[in-house]
Image 1: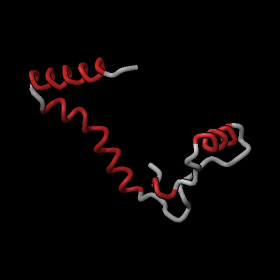
Image 2: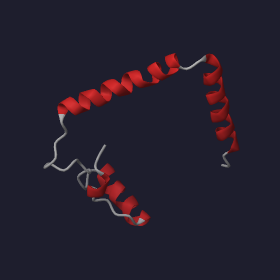
Image 3: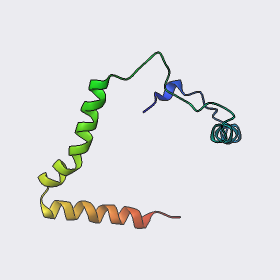
Length: 83
């Protein structure tokens, strides 16, 4: 994930739309991670490893009743949202 404080995109919605249009048509370079701060490959691998097994490990540790409660709460939250 890029560091949010170093993003060079404009905050104004119109300017942002213009910048995205330029990037998508190849008229401007796409935003990339600053060259001065490369990612640590070991940290990237550890983060990926945890992300891959996190959901399965959580589901295995929950009881069926607790899983059902979580699912019901999520369904209520989805249905209460207004379009």
